[in-house]
Image 1: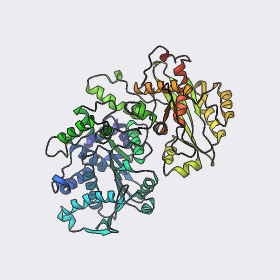
Image 2: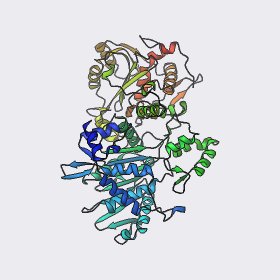
Image 3: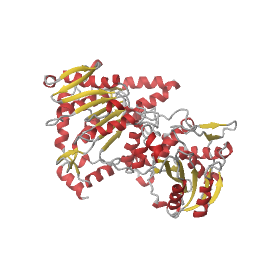
Length: 588
């Protein structure tokens, strides 16, 4: 590739990621981005000169960036692109998301980045910086780290005014100002500048985040920088940023302005292994420079492993493994909760890299290669359809048994929502981003437009060989399923919304997730709805999903549609769907 050769000649080939994120960097280069070692070094020299630690036993000591910190932040500040609007090169990245377990030096690093933006990166222009969190007290905690770093640097402190506004700290450096802001959308209206976001996994709703995103619009190099630990709620800003990081790294989503990095154990890693601990905690060590000491980490592990009340928190906070709501269907049924579903397509690059390290051919490893809808054209499939009430989502899921590997099933979902519902709920659910990314389609008005959905379904199914469609017989627009059946020639079958109907298919679905036999492309709306799904059990341990009450914003229509589409896998109906007739089904 000519651009790679040019990068090698200019000495920055190493800044093109290998594996996860590689495709994103290649696309950015094609769009005119390049890496400036000078700009990266400008940040690194500032960090080396002004970085100090400000708490506990490290108070006042020099803060030397660890290897992972230097590499990640040099990438953040080094990549640039010429801006025709501003007439000069600007930073490529406007959003930086780092997800890492606690005690790895998150807050001192984010505070130092804030000082660089405030002092080192503001020459010749006026900028504002805002530290944000769920409470102003938490936001001020981050600013206090920055203030103490400034006080430890006389040449910065001499030109800085430190004051209190409404009882909270603020900084002034020339015309530059630094404030704290809590999760109140009204307090963020009209602001512009850089945003430093702490503990994003505690943020609830999307209104504050959506307001903050606009503060970058009037800045040539405005930056939204967030560092956090994994959370447990799939319906949060943190989970949205987590999923976006994985999707961009996997090449299934494109955004050249977004840089994310997740340090975490994989769901299949041994949580009792020191190698797993180090994988998730790049600051873990035994030297004086290690902010996270192995001895204290091991002591916390020994306590958590014998106390079930602490174990899930330890996995989340120490290994950065997202914890599904323990009341959810997958949280109760699968060893790794929602992660057993998430570990599909988005883990393929990591699996390939690990295979190469072991000296194995990547083709020999089941890497969950992504697939396109076009690659399934002409194949036999089954449709599951879950129709909405007036203002909810409508979902349709197609399931395909792989003709070459009968144990593998691939699923493709589609979702619809009335546009007025999307508008009213976009502050609590990221509908706007899902619509922009083509994951959800709106229909006009306040109510579900079944005619639009019917036309979309007929067009969608035309390239496939849809032999059967399952639907809720209580669905209020039954005419739609009849019209669709007539149009595509698929047998129309009512699916009882009972333990008898759902029990066998939910058991099969759980087994397939554990075995990584249910394949998908990391569809964020379907993943969100799976995380929302709770299940009820009867005396025979059969399960069925529990529909949310009318007006509940957390939907599960995609879950129900997918389960219905898997009915033929359970019964063995069809040309290639008899795998489970001849193989034992695990009972979880």
